[in-house]
Every structure is written in C-alpha cells, then in structure tokens.
Length: 296
Image 1 (tube, helix red, strand yellow):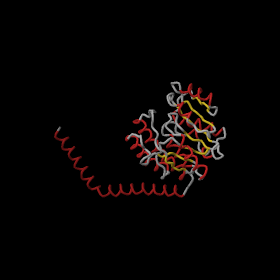
Image 2 (image 1 turned 45 degrees about the horizontal axis):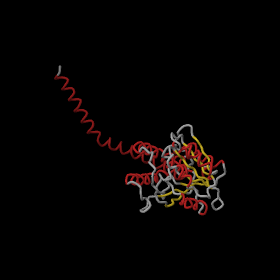
Image 3 (image 1 turned 180 degrees about the vertical axis):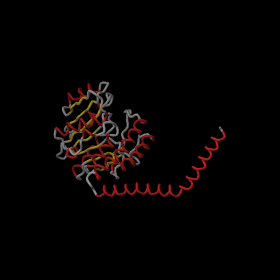
Image 4 (image 1 turned 30 degrees about the vertical axis):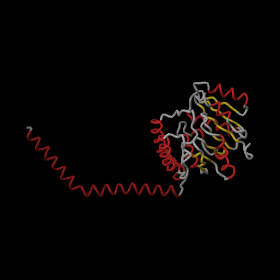
C-alpha cells in the first residue's frame, strides 16, 4: 500500500519482448497489483510476462485475442483494477519509458490534494531531454489544441501516457466508449472534463531509451485531428447544451446570432449587388442571342 491506498498499475504491451521484463522488474514494492495487457502480441511478450509472474505474484496477465489498440489495452486493465478494489490506478507503458521513481509524484495529489486525475508533463525546458524536435513540436501543437478541446486549460503534454487516476473517478466514465487508439489520452481527458474530474499536471522528465515508437505519424495526425474536432462539439453538447447549462444556452444564442448575421449579410450584399447582377445577366443573354443569330 501507499499511504493507506491500494495502488494498481496497468501495463499495456504490444510486441514488447525486449523491454517488458525491465518494466515489470522496476515496479515499486508498494504497488499492490500489476495488470499487464498483452494486446495480441506477435512476439514473446506474454511468455516473458508469465516468466516474471512466477516470482512476482502481483502480476496479472490479461491477453487479448484480437489487437484493440493501446486504449483498449488500458481499459482492460482499468476494469480489472476496479473489480479488484484498487483505490488508484496508474498507467506505465510496457516499453520501460516511464520511470517508476516518479510514481509517488502522480499519486500524492490524488491522496493529499483531493485531485482525481494526474498526468505527467515533459513540456518544460530541462524535462524534454531526449525528445526529438519533430515529436516536441508535435506535442506543443497538440497541447494547445487539446486544451481548447478538453477544457483543461492548464494541462500540458496531453499525449503523455504516464497518468494516475482514482478508481472512484473512473467509475464515472463509460470505459467501453473510450477511444481505443493512440488518441485515447485525449479522449480520456474529454470524458473526464464532462464528469468534472479535477486534473493536474506533474512535471516528470522524458525517459527515452531503447524503445521504438509504433505510431504511424501521418495517419495519427489525420485521425487525431478529426477526432479532436468531433470531441470538442461532443463535450459542448454533453456538458453544457444537453443539461441546459447557462453556458450552453449562451452558446446556442451565440450560434443563432452568428447564423442570423450571416444571412443578413448575404441578403444585404445580394440586394446591393442586385442591379449589377441583373445588368450582367442581361448582357450575357444578349450575347448568347447575338451569337445564336450569327450561327443561323
């Protein structure tokens, strides 16, 4: 236990035979349960997890028969953690990228500061060491967009998967409706905002080693952009408009005024240019008539 709380760790893993052993062996002693989700790996990931689990009885292996994506793998772990009565569940990827020595920094705000949800933040000078320039710029851009979409204006580094969340807070979210792919982190933030979870950033330095990213960036950028666009309106509808929140009413009024203004502008412009349109149309018809006559 950690400060009287049962801590569960979800470890999503897909083809992590090289690093999964180091990830599991580095888990702190205070962790109660370790939920490793093998997302239908094609290598020896499951075999290695079973081998480590012989010595570490805290490990529970969850095996997907079909690849569901990192979000699906995490959700499977979340469900088991809730079922087994964990108080807080954290996520640490199977590629050993998340340093366990910083885990208490994620847990403390939930235990001592009445927060529901904590997320690591690498987007500060000195903390992004080892991150490629391409990834750094991409994370900054996504950080700005995600703030607008999720409503968490003070949260940075939305793609950082090193998180912790209380299981009581998780119960408020429909886990089966969470995005299954790499936009899972963004979707979890959107859903958390709708149910009013208190979220805070925790500064944790980047930790890059021998892992290789499995993200196909071109498709990720397109899919995530479209998803975030839809998620923004989903959040507005479910949090403000659907519940007749004052903000939702103002949004509807603003939208109606915007549409009305557009129509009024169109009518005014059309009325102003109507003589020109009529004159131009008449000249065009006359031209067609003369051209027709000349061809007889």
